[in-house]
Image (cartoon, rainbow over all chains, first blue to last red; front, side, top):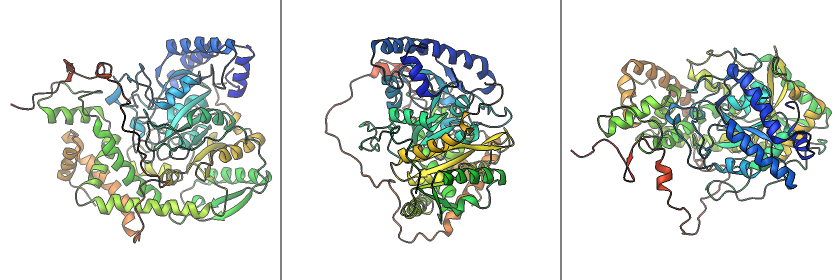
Length: 484
Length: 95
């Protein structure tokens, strides 16, 4: 059952080849068998999942099921889930039972999907390797000694190992696309404002966006359909009709102009990864796409810009964790200041503390203009580069990550080196554009991701390109050894 | 910009973060590396480029001034570290 697409699973459920309860039990059993070594889940929701599955079976027999009715999924532990621990990968929220549902959670519930559990992630989504989680690192199913990428590392690993047919992720600087690339799955970060951020624990509010992680573009389209749409509870959510993401999957690619930014194929890109990405672009050419060389002259500013903007927003957002109203509180505080300082000092891990301090420094009196204002100007230059490019091309293609999965521990002591893992993904968040990563081959048995970047609200076209590519390649159907 | 340990302690105080004294040196090194990295931005001639506020140039929506939330105090306080009579408890603030 775990090799089927979401559409096949939905068909199986509707024609009663199997029930949602059987399907859910199948995945729960796989999780129990395999997740000990992967550590992809923080919380398994066996009882509620089976209850949701039984509920879905009633829906399925009553004859009005939706496309996700009875379909199990794994939910990144950044989305609030009423009555279920929502840890965000942090000791700070280890005891936090969310008192309400995020909009994305509510939408999956409404669609009749079955939540298998909450997936592991870098603490507060700050990381590119899933090593900053309070619950320990996630291992990459393709090679247990390598990282799955981050911050949505648990979601990527469990979909790759087929412990869940689909998962949710969030992407602030590459946190859906980079782990999707490193684990050999399909992940999409929508346009900023396409999916509600309500109840999604905030890291950098002007960059955070939720999206689907799945085995294929066709599956990602079904998930995005359930996630996308206006929500009055998120003031930055865009009130604009949602496209039908499955309708155009098979559109011809003839004449599609694909921009290849020369800055994405230069120094810093591993030779094997470059070769795989170039081969993928050849496939797209065979499908009728026309490559166009383009330039994003300010691409080199993206990572330094991000490491001002994101920490600044993080330092502000994370000031809410004060040990008073919810979350971790230190033992025997002397006074109120001691309560704040030790609750935060003990509740947050080192990477979160680093980012809070960088942000605090960048926003402090006398430094604001030099750091934050300058970075927001650079951000405009980066967005303008894309705007100019999209006058000449329909989509942009390049590598998702500069390398395949690296070894656990390899970059953990060197934050700047770790930050460069997202050198090709970050600009997309700064500009607010949609981007996706799809499997495009292997280097030494580790997956390579092809990144596709679209114009604002052009998710349907990205899915179309990805789906056509997946019709003529089989990288996305490969399952890591031992998980078949 | 290389941060001295005393500067790290000051930033940590502003951010209300208790840092183990043994870790201050390490943070000074890491934070200095990060600041040195982002200082590449100094070389950018941004002239009078408008700082970006929102990628879609959207402005904040206004909603009707109506009560939309119900009182859920007990429910929300169920996950608080310490409450009494509907109030959050903290160490004594006024001696």
